Amino acid sequence: MSTLTALPERPLRFIRNHRLVTVEAPAPDAMLLDWLRAGGEHGTREGCAEGDCGACTVVLGELHQGSLRLRAVNSCIRLLSSIDGCALFTIEDLQAADGALHPAQQAMLECHGSQCGFCTPGFVMSMFALYHQAGAGAPPGCIDREHAQTALSGNLCRCTGYRPILEAAQTMHEHPARPLDEATLTAQLRALQVPEGQRLTSPGGVTWRPADRTQALACRRASPAAQIVAGTTDVGLWINKGHQAPAEVLDLSGVAELAEIRVGGGELHIGAGARLTDAFDAISRRWPPVAGFLGRFAGQPVRNSATLGGNIANGSPIGDSMPLLIALDTRLTLANTRSQREMPLEHFYTGYRRNRLGADELVCDVRIPEPVPGQVVRAYKVSKRFEDDISAVCLALALRLVDGRILAARIGVGGMAATPCRAPATEAALVDQPWSLAVLQAAGDILRNEFTPISDMRASAGYRREVIGNLLTRLWHDVQDGGVSLAELQP
Ligand SMILES: Cc1cc2nc3c(=O)[nH]c(=O)nc-3n(C[C@H](O)[C@H](O)[C@H](O)COP(=O)(O)OP(=O)(O)OC[C@H]3O[C@@H](n4cnc5c(N)ncnc54)[C@H](O)[C@@H]3O)c2cc1C
Ligand code: FES
Ligand code: FES
Image (cartoon, rainbow, N blue to C red; front, side, top):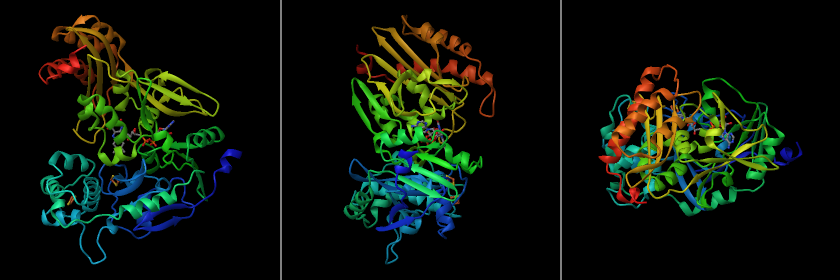
């Protein structure tokens, strides 16, 4: 316990409107949205309380590599304790002292983007983040429709229809610029960064907030029963919907070291605590054809909080990043205070939501070999809705094509078994074969029978089998007709 009690007891501190706000002893399961609304701020709405509708969207300002970065997040599933050291913006903070609306609000008004108004604060906050990401002084037209759609992918509107809202997002920069005082805010955030971690003790329990990897592993060792959280986009649902009330929480969201993304030894290293937005960006830059697939993971505010390590450790059989990571031959680094070990991701899982993580270990690093010549990587997600939905089936493939032959194949699947897994029989049917539709279709038949999926509310077992085999035919058309680049095919 000694290392744990060494984390100093300190109130939660964050910046709001350039002023320091302190909160004494928030309970370990206190959510940001509940705290806002209990304090009388009702502009931030509660719709679903599970990250699905965006009514609760707020914007967090954080220091990233020394600079200010604004991102929209869902406050309903964001732990209050996790905003320590951040700047918080809610809908109540947007109107200027003289009453002038923020360009995001003004554009919504002028484009008739609101009817009942329930969803409007959430949309406006996502637009506020987008506005400042583009830059307050950016020219009109700097945000195109696709950009606006991505930024608003986590916000649902039941009555207005999306056309006027998207139009508002695209025209915000036509209004008089409203810059943030970034220099002051950055200095204020810097002053809040402290290296010694934090302990928040309340009548409801305790939250450990380590500031570095060593402290995080020491906390894990001293308190293996503490609920680990990173982005809380899974755990937040267990609290809000499952009514779990963890008395002890190990919150990794302040450990910048675990969120690092770097290249070394021929591998892309993604820290387990890297936000999905950043992790997916690094992956998409190396394998551009999977960008569309990764863009279908939840909505942007969820991806801004959720971490890659959280997706892997949660281990849902329909988790979306694991099939792709398995296809890419990813290895995990698991560490405790004394040592660390590595294992291929596909060996991490032992059963439905069970894995090999030791009681004193954390997932620390996700290591993906860099692309090789001739590598063709594709990933497919089949779900009921195109956006913001969980997979019924997911298939990812990394093939090596040289001179019209398949030299190597790795396949990751989701939704077909109790865990995300590899498809070795299908891989064997592809390796050393010519790259042809007939070979892919024969492999599709093998893939259909390689697993025994279940029927559930997302899909029947028969549908899952049929569709996953068909995805190999889709791969053929995708690569042939979709135009795989020559550079991809050259050895
Ligand atoms: C609206 C919505 C949509 C979603 N859509 C998708 C989707 O399309 N596809 C999909 O796959 N998932 C989806 N999810 C699930 C979720 O967003 C992901 O699983 C996410 O990656 C979890 O990361 P997190 O950091 O939020 O995890 P948390 O909720 O903080 O933690 C999840 C689990 O991982 C453990 N954990 C976290 N970090 C570590 C670590 N470093 N070491 C050991 N254990 C750790 C925690 O103890 C916990 O058991 C969705 C969730 C929501 C709310
Ligand atoms: S209330 Fe619906 S996403 Fe938070
Ligand atoms: S304006 Fe009514 S839900 Fe969007």
